[in-house]
Amino acid sequence: MFLWPLAIDVVTEIIRGRPVRLVGGVLALFLAWKAAALLATRSAGANRRGAALVGVSAGLTAGLAAGMGPLIAVALGFGAWAGTRLLTEDLPEAPPPPEPAPIPETDPLAPQRAQLQRVADAAPALPHAVEMGGAVSALRDVLDDLALRPARLPDARRHLNMQLDGLSRIVDRLEAGATPPKTLPALLGEIAASARRLRSELNSAESEALDIQVKVLAERLRQEGP
Image 1 (tube, rainbow, N blue to C red):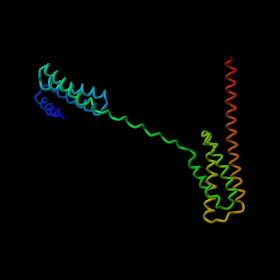
Image 2: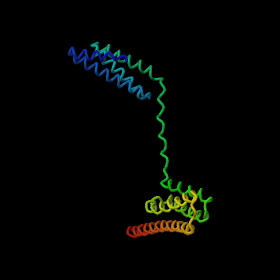
Image 3: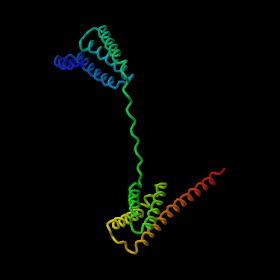
Image 4: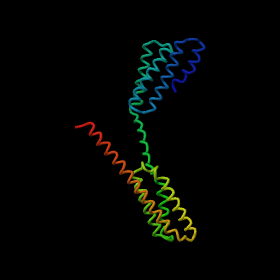
């Protein structure tokens, strides 16, 4: 604020063609702006650097832009530095920025869990509740296994979604008042059996992967020797 008249002086020096005073005015304005940016951060180190830039800016203003003698320019620069230090040394430091909020972990099986829970909540009030409960339990076991083995999820997702979608559609029709066909208990039993087979396949795949890792490690140990 105190140095803004230098902007008018810069225009004047351009017209008059005095490059030394022009350079002094431009440098003083730039350093004053830089000092203000540092002081705005309100940290101890920035306050010291900002005060030093204020002193240099004042010295340049006096020595180059105003054409004063070197001793006067140095004295004015020192006074500006000392005054800025007195004004800023007791300012509280700006509080540190808050830590970013932790990114919540996303459950890749959340839609399937919600779909299955909806079926489980509706099952007790529907026909063939026992068979439907068995299918829900078997599918829940598959979801629990996939949560422990997320790498197997792409392989099982299509089959799992088909079973869940089919079960959800059955529940929707029964809640709408549809009469269950005689083949419904057998179908629910097949869904449960299919879920158990899927779970068995997942376990078998893990066992095969472990067997391969054991063989590879044993072969490396034999090749490297004692």
